[in-house]
Image (cartoon, rainbow, N blue to C red):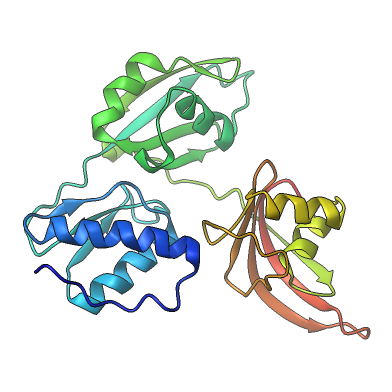
Length: 256
């Protein structure tokens, strides 16, 4: 197979860049099953859509059933190893408080890219990390701090994986429009001009892809991430007020 006839018309410009990567993976998988890096939910969706168009088999694995970030095995082959390791984070939990961003930052500081890292999960004060197995020993041997806090990692069997807690908190807001500039300015309590600046400088993502259109109308199900603040998930609408404002139920991770 040397030519893939796929329809890319409904993808955004940012998503089309990713589709080119996917098509390259398909060429490699035509000879031998291909294991991808970790993919976010939107990347998984795009990969699956393109694979269905051309008849490729795709399987996903993230280390546990409810994983958000997953690797994909592409191709009609019998390989089943997603090459994911589980690391336990050890630290002085009786007086140190960790956050998802702190744990993730400890890895990025050592030059590990986002797509080699799976989910960072926690249950109360216990934290674990899913990671590309080829990097597990490096993390264990070299990552000793998260910000100013002393930490260590150790490899553990998957039988010891936590039952992860969600950090998302639900709330209802009243808003005149679902434009992302208005949405993030209201939720994070800063000016609309600042919201537009964040969007136009690439610090806002919708469904894990950069969105520079300040007037984009967020849809139910969209995940809007703002660098340094957190992310918002649009859950459902609850009708309108007497002044025709929208009652919107959202989920928030981070500030807000």
